[in-house]
Length: 311
Image (cartoon, rainbow, N blue to C red; front, top):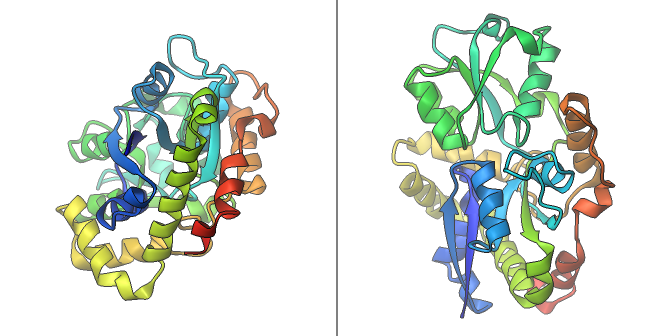
């Protein structure tokens, strides 16, 4: 059995991992997979580059940033980092404190992001600009991953933030407002991808392919309507404050064919290009490497060509 440490951020988009663990899909491929939440993208990249973790479920923007030397670690660079599978389309929502009911009211307020120049920070800037708010008219605070930002928002430490499912529903239960959903602005947006260091993957191809196949089997299980109630139980076990009806709504978001989990696990070029364009608008320098360098579909193709993919 090969032990894999997968790094991620809090959110319902981790459902395929939880299902693959509970249904023992990883074990079929001789994998013992543990999911660990990171403090933020800097922590994630540091752990991947140090070898204390093997795979990350992270925003593709992080891959683009660190491949181009634009990250926020000490070196700002992880030229060995690549995306090897598609995960989801973001599940992003701009939330605000109860007294703020429109994006225009965010002018002069403090907004939290994971890191200032990676992840989904530039999506937030795009939303502000679309609503005629200059970036200079707000203050940004790097507060770490989704769960951290949600808790900070509820505690009143920030006026608004981007969160990911199911934290928008949990925040609404606390009186906060969804001001904008990401899918209303960015139809082709690519959110989470599976990322890995090429040097590790090239020496462990069977483990990468096994991970993909187990994840694929979990996706098939999630998209099977016969498993709805079981999935609701999983979601409510992971998020104790999630009401039953909210868990059902979260599941509907997850299996949405246009905006949900990417069932074929492809990395769509349109989504990759959109993220790159948004990054190039807001980053201090444009992405310096060709987009193709940031993606390695070799392992996904090996998985798709195997007999295990059809399950």
